Amino acid sequence: MQQNKVEEVKQMCKLSIIVPFYNSARFLKRCIESLEDQDIEKSCYEIIMVDDGSTDEGASIVKHYQGVYPNIKLYSQPNSGQGAGRNLGLAHSRGEYISFVDSDDYVLPNKLSNILSLCDHLEQDILYCFANVYDSIGKAKKSIEFHDFNEDVTYRGDNLLLSNIIVGSVWAKFYSRNFLLNNNLKFGVGFTHQDSDFMYRCLVKAKKVNFLNDIFYSYCWNEGSTIRTKDSAQLVHSLKSSLIVASNLVDMGKSQDLSEDLRSFLIKRKNSMVIGQLFFLLDNAHDYTTRDILDILKFARKRHLFPIKGESESKLSTIFSRVANIRAVFLLMFWINKWCHVKDLCQR
Image (tube, rainbow, N blue to C red; front, side, top):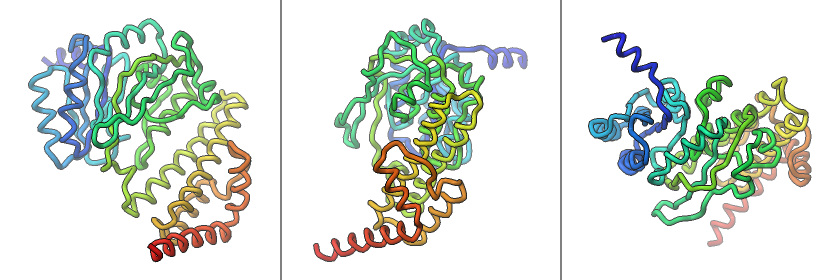
């Protein structure tokens, strides 16, 4: 019996779809049924559901579907965040290819056969697919498409970065398992925005990236998402998380096998991200206290992000950084913006 279990664990399948979930019970039925409504055998792919310490009935819903579909696996962890959940899913995955789906999203039916055939043919590190974006009431907002990139061409990840491809979410993509394992690519934990951090790491390492001009994924705008909260502590945490991603770009730039162009790009992108957060603080001064600002600047200084050194991706933001580098001046700009907001409220 034990030998059979070992053989089962070692047996590979074609695809592992990893879905972390936390208190998203109301979306799970739609998500799971969309993943099962595909044109390949259930034995060809597994759906790895990771319960990130949910307090709703999400785990019960998944267990119900386990009784219906043999390819659903359920793992649990104390609440540790989406990145930790994806890492747990990766650790248990058996697929030749890996894909990530958010629990409040869903995929289009009967897409996997074509996608997996293309993956086998291309043997790529990453395959990008198109996605639709919907608002909180299900109305289509836009599509995420990559028409600037030829479906018949294989690209290097560093060249895509240098061409300013949007570095966004991990969903709507298929990753080679060997590519992830050989480069020790995992998600950061303890901060938000792990998606962009992970994608930077992937694109720096990827030698073969392809695009499929077909919509596979449906991203649903969730108003309750933590990245859109107005809670003060969460706002500060989110901003610090962006600074962590910027700091990690510096570490990526220290790799010995990078071109000078890519190294320079990573430094400029890091500076632009920091400047973007400073602009955000000024534009949203009413959401932050002076203590918040001092805490954030101290955090940035500790990670050698502030004062900002070197150029950014635009001349205007580089000029702004020279002014913002003077802490007293930046604080003055913050107080002026905060006062103007209060004055505006009083005059309404």
